[in-house]
Image 1 (cartoon, rainbow, N blue to C red):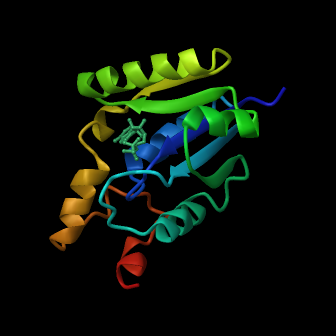
Image 2 (cartoon, rainbow, N blue to C red):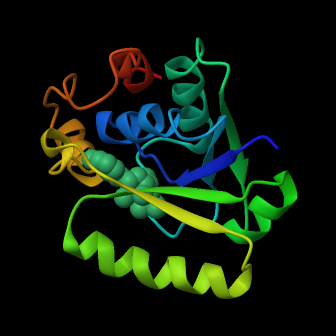
Image 3 (spheres, rainbow, N blue to C red):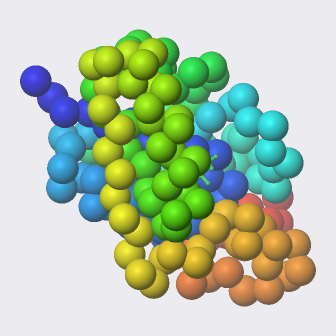
Amino acid sequence: MEKIAVFPGSFDPFTVGHESIVLRGLKLFDKIVVAVGQNTSKNNLFSFDQRMRMLQDIFQDEPRVEIVTFEGLTVDFCKKINAKFILRGLRTSADFEFERAIGQVNKMLNNELETVFLLTSTNHTPITSTIVREIIKNEGDVSQLVPTALDIKKYLKE
Ligand code: ADP
């Protein structure tokens, strides 16, 4: 059976840290579904449509990565597409505490589902979408923080 992992997040914007998790995940799974959540209470910098297009740009040459959108619970979305794994990145102990609770409750909601955590690469540990947004808002250069295939300036001009 095809091993499908869902990589959920808000990706506002997608960073080199996220990209690294997806690329490393491709060594473990047959397919990674990058799922952009719509039900976030976060204050977004990039519109939902822009984030979807950015991801399509980044993974246009990777047929094993699918970009989708979802609403509602991640566990329900996984069931719908028959994914048995949720992929998450772990940067810090704060990430761990947050992810532990979500992962354990997701397991209670669907015992068939496993959350797989990859430790972030050391050089990506300090990179967060929040910091990238702050740099962008202050007109700084984020080119080394976002994937090379992402022309972020193009999106900022829209
Ligand atoms: P969320 O809305 O769930 O916080 P994010 O877009 O911030 O979504 O992150 C999605 C996933 O990517 C999470 O598992 C997060 O831990 C992981 N992640 C975020 N930044 C990095 C990074 N720099 N290195 C590795 N993983 C990361």
